[in-house]
Length: 190
Image (cartoon, rainbow, N blue to C red; front, side):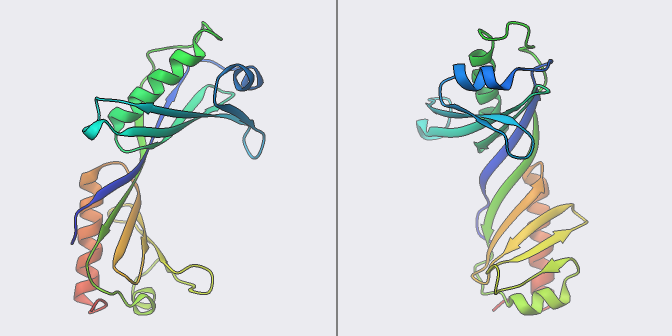
C-alpha cells in the first residue's frame, strides 16, 4: 500500500447560543447566506500560516447554522480546524458579544487517500463484498461501506482508495489494511 494522505478534515464546535444568520452574512467579509436545505452562513477563510508544514496556504470554509453550530471543512488536521474555528469566533465576536469563545472543538470526519498500486476488478469486488455499490454508467468508482471498522470507501480501478466516515488515522489505516487484505485474499487485484 502506498502512503496515506489526509485530503480533508471536518471539525465541529458551537458558539453557545443562537445567531442571526442574515446579519452575519452581511457584515462578515467573504460570507454568504445559503437558504438551501438547512439555512446557514458559509464563510470562506484564506490565510497563510507558518504553524503548518511548509507555511502552506490554508483555504477552508466555515458553515454556521442559526442554532450556533459551526462546521469547518477544507483543513487537513484538527489543529488547523481549531485555528480556523478561533478565527471565525474572532470574526463573529464583535457582531455578537455573547458567543462562547471556549466551546470544545472536535473532529467529526476525515477523508484520506491511498493507493494499493494494483488494478482492481471492481465488478468482482462488487459481487464479493457485502455493502458494495457499483454502477459504472453513473460513477466510475465503487462505493463500499464497512461495519468493522466503521468506514466508507470509494475504490477506483486504478487502485486509488478514498476512505471516509473515520475520525482518526489509526482507523483509516485499519480500514485500508482490512480492505487490502480482502482484495488480496480474493484475488481481485492484478
